[in-house]
Length: 168
Image (cartoon, rainbow, N blue to C red; front, top):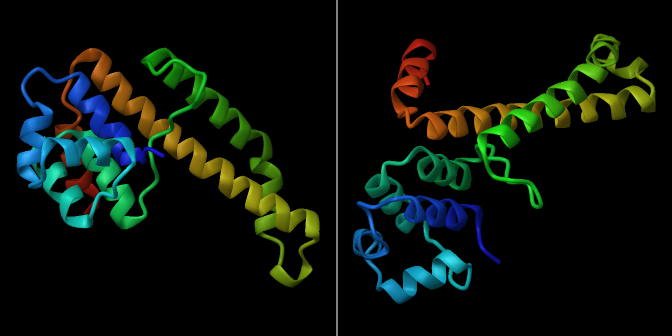
């Protein structure tokens, strides 16, 4: 089964006229055949290969997927059966935000209740809210990346400014 990193690498290579699979393979270093098997999920990416590819590609989706795999960062949202474009990203972001907002007030009441006094329903609600919140964050990141891609704007300066402000 193809990994998310493999999927992001495929998408990067499909939309790139300057970087070819041969270049990526050389950066690892592996043969093009080995890289193909890694991309398809028939062979594992090692931490070293992921790092080498991310450094060589210098593409936000590839780098983010590498960080996700190595450091537990949330992944981009890829929804089967949905188009993979900016309109879908807006739609998904709105759905995730609505889901979170629908339970937020109840979550606040549950979260501010003493842990020993919480009902089973409140405990489940807390878990559900946190699940919805992380999904909304993932859809926001996806929306940002897809908007930048659609507008042909490099997202890296925005990310660098954000990181400088917040010490990321």
